[in-house]
Length: 245
Length: 245
Image: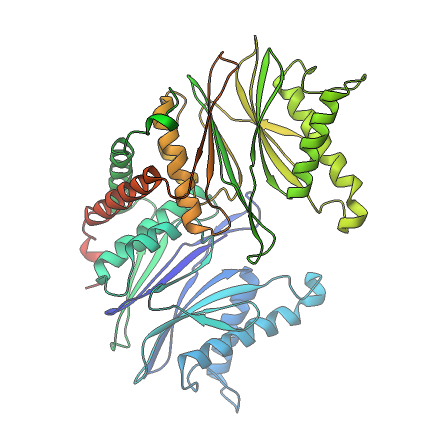
C-alpha cells in the first residue's frame, strides 16, 4: 500500500508521500513515491504514485525517455497546461499496463494512480489526480486536497484541518498528522516520509525527507494522543435514557 | 455499507450498530442490524450483521425456525458455548449463500459477516466475529473490540479510547464517537443508531435507539470538533529544516 496526499492552498502546494512498498508482508521495501520533475525552466511538476511499482517506475522511465528524445510526440516540456500533463501521464500508465496485459493476466492488473501537481509559468498552480483509466480530477475549492493509496485513515484530519486559506506551516502539520494516523493503522504505510512544499509562482521546491526516528514526528504523535485523550475525558455525560446504568 | 462494533470490557459488553442500508445511492433504507436473541432463560445473545441484507434476514429467519422446531439439529437454545453459537450462525450464513449461489451468479456473492456477543450462564461473556466463510475470531484482551462493515474510519477512536478496564459509560462515548466519525466519512453509514449494553452476569440487556436529531449526538460532535481544532493549534512548530519557509 501507499499513502500520498497533496494540498492546494492560497499560498502554495504541499505534497507528502510515504515510502513503504510491499509485495506481501514478507517483502517490504523503501521506494520514493514523490518525484520532482523539472522538464523546462518555465515549469515544475511533482508526481506522486500509488499502485503497481513496476508500472509507476516504467511510467517515470517513459517520461524521461520522451524528454530525452522529443521527436514529434507530446512530453512534459511541450504540454501547455497541467491538465495536458495529467492526460499524458494517464496515457503512459495505460500504455504500460496494456503492454504487460498478457503477462499480468488481464489489462486491469498492474494499475497505478498518480497525483500530479505543480505550475507552468502563467498558469494557476494545481493538483490533479490521474486515475488508472487515464482521466483526471482536480481538487475543489471546498475540498482542496487529493489522496491516493490508503486514503481512509487520514481523511478526517484533512477534512478537519484543511481549507484553502490555511497557511503552509499549519497545512504541513495537518498533512503529517494525516500521515501518522494512516501509518499507525496500516502497517503497509510507513516512514521515511517525503515532504515537498511549493510556493506559488516560484517554479522551485522545498524538499525534505523525514526519517523514522525523527524527534518531530514523535512529538507530533505525543501531542495528538494527549489532546485526543483529553477530548475523550471531556465528552459530555450520556443522557440518562441512553446510559448503561 | 454498515458499521457495527462491539466491545468486551471488564464490566460488560457494548454493541453499537447503524441502521442504513443501500442498494445504490438511489435506494437507501433503514433496517435494524442489531438483533437481541433470548433463546432460553440461561442465555442472551446479540447478533449484529453486515453484508447482504437478504442473507442476514434469511439467517435470522432460520435461527427462529430452528428454535421453533427444534428437532434433532443444533440451535441457539441447545449450544453449550458461545463459540458453538458462532459456528452455527456461520454455517447458516454459508447455507443461505449456497442456496442462492446460482441466482446470485457465484457462491461468493451475497455474503454476510456477523458479530455475535452475549453470555451463557456459567460461561465468560464474549464477543466473536463470524466470517462469511463460517469461521470466527474472538476479541483479544489487548484489543477488546470487533468491527464489521466500514471499519476503517472509526478504528483510531477505538484504539485510542478502549481497553478492557474502561468503564461502560466511557466506552459508550468512545463507541458513539467511532460511529460519528464513520458516518461523517461514509454516507452509507447513518443514523438512527442502536446501542445495547450488557452487564456481565445479568443475562439481560439495556437497549436504546439514538435518533438522527439527538441533541446528545450533536453535542458529542461539537465537543470533538472543538478538541480536535484545539489540538491542531497546539501542534509543535515544524523544525527549521522541514519548514516550508
